[in-house]
Image (cartoon, rainbow, N blue to C red; front, side, top):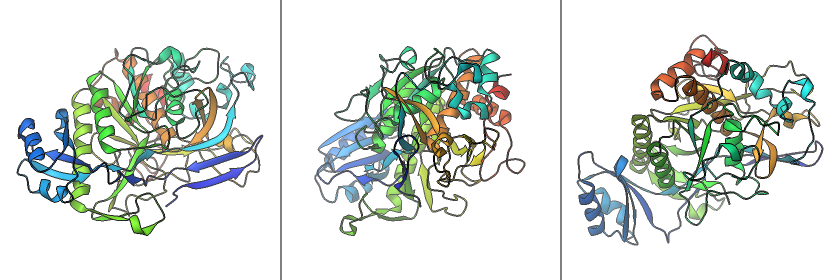
Length: 465
């Protein structure tokens, strides 16, 4: 798998790219944090009392989905909780959720360079570099009147630069919130990847059409920053993701963007604890994996019941999900989540007529897992200078930069979903939005659902015309 693959080239200045894998680290032994999945129908207060009696020092309840976060110093706490009658499953609270995007160390200054507006018909000076919007016919959707007005999108990520001039008009600061202890949802200008990840995602969804920088797919949609990953290292815990999903649904988000993920082995297996040192590896049992999958599915089902569409990244390790069935990438691999693969051109800067819809070299794929495809950027290092233009350009704290990954594909789907919802009065059932996304997508692979594109690569104009 393509974990932590660094690529270095020299376009105008040095460029470094990291294709982010999904392996992470478990909470430190000091934390001794556990996810507990309660049995349906068992009173929450009873489960909390049972956990305390079993040796929990503290219990936090996610009552909406029947999941509990317990901390304990008891070395056999996992086994003890597994014996409780009101518990369906228990697992160590892994810190292996991570951004699903690659990043480029090549950014643009806030004041330039400009692309001649006459060449692309818009005053936002970087719009001419947004090949992804051409790929999905976003411009045509805007001319049809679809802008995402009145639609609320929750970006569960590393936080957002709320002062960015391309974003500030569309960010709801009052509702934005952090679920990462000790970190605010506000990311300071000048922060780079992984902390810049959430800002990049937000710009693809809803950067304003303001004669500055780029334009988002839904330039009048509202963004709520829900921080669930650290802006220091790009990692987060599963309980933070679940809390963020519940919060987003409870504040009436129409769509949740999850440009993140974590791999688990359904049969159980050794986790490398995020290091090359084998001495700190540990065994994650199949029962623990089942508990995490169950909790993720509950969070997604809850959001869907509340009227919130959930969209997630398929992952960046070029895994064929049809032949690697023991591995599951969460949250994209559970029901009620649209799982998105990434597409992109090779050599677009040198030939703007090139195919924009190649499956990205890093993208996970597989008919059993992929629901939709969207532009996420591509890379071919045989191009000596201009290959970074095949990536997706968007906002980062204080400026703009290129990035690639299924993280970048996901917000394109979310943006089109926002256009659909906006054109239908600002409220739609998630299942109805998904039907439109599927029916309006361009069927680029074999007829019907296929390995690379799922039900097709999204098309904004088809979705709203």
